[in-house]
Length: 151
Length: 233
Image (cartoon, helix red, strand yellow):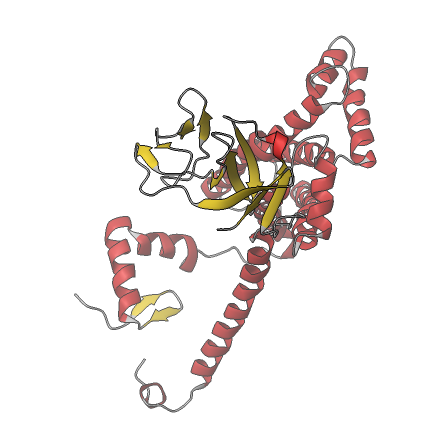
């Protein structure tokens, strides 16, 4: 089509109608995409205690030489007491690919079942693929309670 | 050869990128031939009017059921403990959940209405006659599959209405002589309505019957394409 009206910048009836049609199409598309997007986007219900920056549990819950797995800051964590004096709290999420580590009672260390990562009670990597140590939290015993807090 | 304007029926495309994308697809898939034959140069008979649209409307509603069904399935939980709570969650808490599930529930009702109108038109105009008898057969198969989908979907919210409707709906075939009790047993997956019933109705509703009905719809439409749309006889 090479009429004068089409070649110049003059607004044309057809051009206007094409634009109007395009806008209507865009509004319709938003009318579908917006509700479907809102519908599908996950809404996580906050549980009580998720936001707590520290946690407290009776000292008897973690016997000497054993490990206790807890949820801290909404993620798995582990508390260990290798002896009477020491107490450690670590994130239990392996730094390799996010599996939850397990307590290896034979070696008194942590073992990741996914790809064989090994950590000591302080979180240092002993072997396997993990690139960094497990993040640690502060843990101390106060009046027969273990108090874990962000480092 | 570069074109300045691509003409597809009434559509004129001037954007060079769009022309190149279309041309690349056309070279490989014969896209222009398909579009011309099936869309732009396909002439509908002049005697087709509103009443000829109900098969197509039913198909549109089926697509609506598939899409909204997929969305409802994102939040629905097919267990007797969670089914009703998850449906209440969709209706009351998920944004636009009321709309999505409403479209699914109302769409299923409307589908039955449009199928009845479609069938009535075919019947009154006598279009089921030779050579289109087999199309009536696939059509009735589609009606039965739609009713089956409606019935299986009815149990899934696990409300009192859903539960007792399924008690009655599985009790009815039990009245048949000799085979009835076996049919009831097979439908319920046991003597009573239980988790087993919910699970098999769920499997039927979201996978087995939708796949089957999609195949039969394909056959139904292929028959129309082969024989052409009939006018009133």
